[in-house]
Image 1 (cartoon, rainbow, N blue to C red):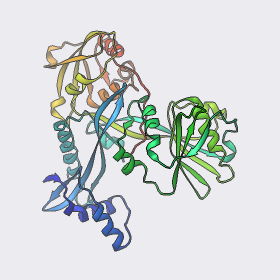
Image 2: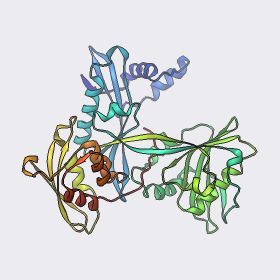
Image 3: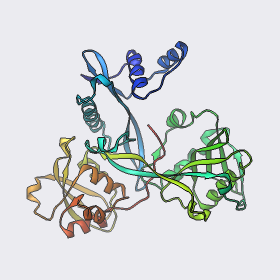
Image 4: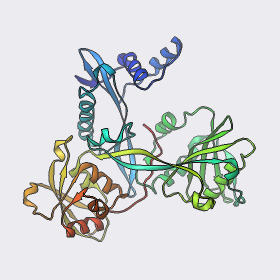
Length: 389
């Protein structure tokens, strides 16, 4: 049986999480505090003979995509008790979650995978990687400070507009609510926020970070222009008497390594996010296609988890980038129609993988003319995701 969790299920959920994620809350007082603070909203559980055997959490939010906010949901805290593993409980929960999202009008589902191949089986696809850098103190930039100044931020809400201006330049970034900021972002103990302001008093960047035992850990580095980026890295470099190294994650398009000049940095590519479209027809009807390329595209979507996506879709795109979607039998489309999995389609609409590239590896099949139409219709875009859920 699958149902939403209640406050009374908190103790079972905590026991499941402690074992599955290998952590422990020490002390009876701390455990009771956790239970008192437990909010069951968004938690779903699979029960076997009355016992909580598996659970996951659904967090609702909006992400930026081609300059628009899209209703989305993140799946997290997926756990199955060992004695119930390999019985299909996680599959049942994920299928239930997708169905629930569709009923709620959610367009996209995101998650952070513990195992990429596991979630690929259910339609999610890897869409985001970030660059993780480890810089020793002697590698930090020594360039001069641009005009303007830094100050420690005492009221976090001051940086909200800076984050939002930065977030909407990427596909995949969350449009954070104040509650999300409070509960999901600004909870890291011992951390501080320093913001950069121009001479005119405009805040154009900030650094959310922590210094402990000679290591600076950068939680967020947000710069809306190059002046702010240079100023923030100068500010990081000014900590050289306190730290031995800096750990930071940057979007793949961030130019900092090139600006630094020393490309012999310790860099690691970190897979960070997977995505899937919940309802293909509904999503494509709301998707902002590239204006000026009116055309008709015929697409056969394959989705073994969400049966409603197993369909032929005729996509009529107008010159203003809006689309009308009609469901049709794929057999009526002819041999040149496009065909792909829901995972591949999810990558294509995010903009970091192009139809021609996916066709070259066999992930997208179809006639050359149809592929070229889709190539022109889909907007490209840089990808970034820094939130966990």
